[in-house]
Image 1 (cartoon, rainbow, N blue to C red):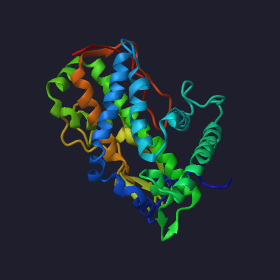
Image 2 (spheres, helix red, strand yellow):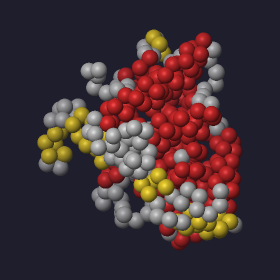
Image 3 (cartoon, rainbow, N blue to C red):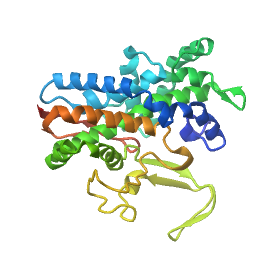
Length: 336
């Protein structure tokens, strides 16, 4: 339609627009606000762990635990009822893994270079159709959820425009859990393939926060963004002009030999661990504290219940050049 992008999320904004829109929800993602959610999130984690372990040997950790658990946490905060969580998961996969034959939208032609535009337009309109009525309801009668916060948010004293509201809810309903899912699934893959790592984590639960940080670095679920330079700059002898497009490879940066000792070694005791899995600067991930808590709680609840774990079959990665992670992590295990 002549617009540079279909969505208008925080990712697509620069300051001051980005700052003003981010400020609408930011207080709800401060550590002190997130800490109040711990009992609720822990109960959710326990329920999903119980359901997963009840499935028995060969159960797929990615699809049956890593995908739905963080999705329920985030979608519940947004105000999406449980009956619609599966729909939101499908839309998330269509958005980020539009070229994966197992996860793409039905009818997608993954060989068509225009497929990303077609799919993202469909996804935007699916979300628009879903959230329009919720927004109107929350504007009339706000409740304690993020949709109410966004629906009644003010930018410069005026209501947020509809496209920005829909896009805000899209990014919260997709990136708000998909990256956590990918990182969690990657963490289990590492534990299942490295018995010494599993034993180390079992023997010393205090390593869990460091394990979470290392899985974020290792998985780098957001693999890349493309940004435009705001000024002329010379980077290691390469002239960059204002307006030039730059491909930012997070997967490469998080394995940079100049920044990390032994970057191709998975080390839960890595200190410091200055990964950029959550981005950096004004655009740093709004939900970083929530994501860390979700992962910490899951490992705190799951590791004590396992005596051993191994892959039941080869794992599989989703096919994507944008946001990516394991799509299958089948496990065999013994209970503690």
